[in-house]
Image (cartoon, rainbow over all chains, first blue to last red; front, side):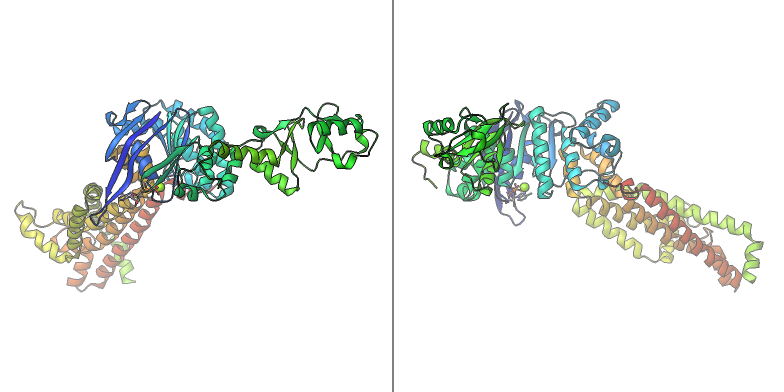
Length: 379
Length: 221
Ligand SMILES: Nc1ncnc2c1ncn2[C@@H]1O[C@H](COP(=O)(O)OP(=O)(O)O)[C@@H](O)[C@H]1O
Ligand SMILES: [Mg+2]
C-alpha cells in the first residue's frame, strides 16, 4: 500500500553544507498494517514521512501509494487522499470542531450535510459527544480531546492511508495510553495503512505491525516488533531497544500463548488421594480445584497433602490471584512476582478455569527464539 | 464657559466639519486597507521585497505632515488638485500604509507554523490556506494596525485645513489666526474626542472580528 524505493533526501544547510536526512530508504507497508518509523531524534523519520505526501520534495527514489507513483499525482490531490496527523495537532483556532473535521471533505467538494453528518459520526467514534463538541472551538478542549479531533480530522474523508508524526507525543503518559488503546481499537475496524513516526520504543512495540529503525537517515532494520526485540541486527539497534528488550517482548505475548492445558483439575468432592495421584502422574506440584461449573476456586499443594486423607474441600487453599487468558505476559509476570508465585491459574472473562502458566514456560517461550538461532548471543 | 456657548451656537458648523474630517479619514483608510493588506500579504512571499516595502513605508511615516502636504501641492497641481480634499486623502493614505502593511505582514508571518503545516498536509492550496486560515487569524492584528492608522490620522487631518481641505482643523487654524480661544479649544476638543471614540469603536470591532474562541466562554470539561 505504501512502497518506498531507494528514497533519499539531501538538505542544503544555510552554511553551504548538506545533510543526508534520508539515505536510500526502501520499505513496504502492507494494506491494513501500522508501520512505526522509530529512531533517535534527527534520524530522518519526519523527513521520510513528509516525502510520502510531498510536504518535503524528495531528492531521489520512488514512492508508491495505493499502487500509484506519487510523481504522477498532483501534490494537492495526493494530500487530500492521505490522512495526516501531527504532534502539534494543528486544529485551526478560527474554526469550530465541526469545521475542522470537515476540512478535507469540504476541499473535496462533498455535500455539506454529508460532511457534517460524518463529523458527528467520527466524534462518536472517539467517545466525544457530538451535541457538546461539534460547535466548540479547539481552545475549549483539553489536550487529549484536541488530539482525538486531530486524528478523526485525518480520517474524515476515509483515506486508505494515514501518516502520523508523533501523534500522541504531546499528551501526558496516562492519557497517551488511553488514546493509543482507543486508536488500536478503531484500527481493528478501519484497517488503514499507517506510517507512524515515534521515538518511543514502548509506543512502537504497542502500535506496530512492523517497525522500521532509522539511524542517520539509513533504515537499519525492518521487522516485526517481536523479531526486532529478539534479534536486533546490530549493536546500535540493541542499545536503542534497551538492555531490557527481552522483557519488553512480554507485552507482545499473551497468556494464552504459553498457557498449559487446564484439563488436569479436581473438584471439591474428589478424594485428596486422587488429587495426589493426578499431580504425581502429571509431575505437577499443584492442582487447581474448580467449582461445579468449572470456575477456579482454589488449589492443593502436593507437599501439604502427602499424608492427608478426606476430600479436596477439607484441604484446599484459596488462589492468591488469577490472570485472564487474554492478558499480556507482562501483566501476568508482574502479578506472579507480586504474589511471589511460580505459577498462576488462568481464567476467562467469566472466571472459568482455562489452564495455568508457569515461570518456566514463560522463560522457555522467550528463550525459544534464541535457541532457534544459535549464532546469536544469549544476551 | 464662553467655549460652551460657542459650541452650542455652532453645532451645525461643528457637525459639518466633523463629517468633513471623518470623510477624509475614512476614505483614505478605506483605500489604505484595500491597498495595504494585499501588499502586506504579497510581501510575505519574498523576504527581500518585504524589507524594501517596509523600509519605504517607514520613511514615509517620518515625513512631517506639513512637509508632505507641501510636497504634494506642486505634484497634484499638474492635475489641478493641488489643494483641498484630494491631497489630504492621499497624505492620510500614505501615512496609513506603514501600520497596515506592517501589521498584515507580521500577522501572516506569525501564523503558527504547525497550523500552516496542517493546512498544507490536509491538501489546501496556497490560496485556500490564505483564505481559510492565514487571513482569518491575521484579522485581529490587521485591525490593530487600522486602529493605529485611524487615530494617528485624525490628528494629521487636522493640519489638512492648511491646504484647504476643511475639517475640524479649521477651528484650530482660525482660532490661532483670530486669537480666538473658543474656536481653538472647540477644535482641539473635537479632534481628541473623535480620536478617542474611533479608537473605542475599532477596539470593539476588532474583538468582534477575532475568532470566536477567544471571546466565547470556555465550557467545562
Ligand atoms: N529543512 C531542513 N533543512 C536542513 N536540514 C534539515 C531540514 N529538515 C530536517 N533537516 C535535518 O535532517 C535530519 C533529519 O530530520 P528529521 O527528519 O526531522 O528527524 P526526526 O524526525 O527523525 O527527528 C536532521 O539532521 C535535521 O537537522
Ligand atoms: Mg520528527
